[in-house]
Length: 134
Image (spheres, helix red, strand yellow):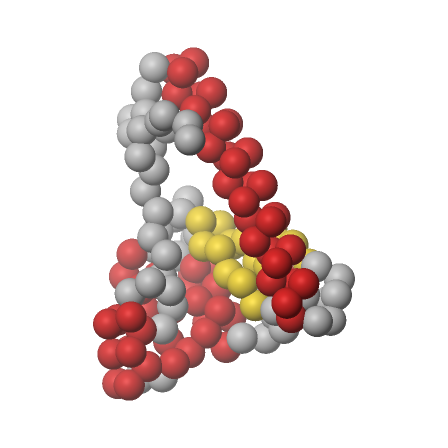
């Protein structure tokens, strides 16, 4: 594990209270867009995973993210080009079966996180500042 300052991040999939309340009172497809509407702002990064590229909750969240001037990173399988249209960065695993697509997404996401963590740590060592504070 790398020693570094904490970085701001939020997984929208982990707040089961919010997900079920939004799903019950509005619609399941609003489960990610509502929190992004409240919390997302210019320069934030929204990452969405949809094996099919057609998941309404992810597509709606990306629409809100783009409205809020967020950067969008989409992960899909072979036929996921609907999500590509709203992604600034797009990773398509060209397979049709869900398990290997999702396993590949996990590997790619871990590689990206490791790269970013090293990049931010190098940057903070160079400037002497935490990467997310001015």
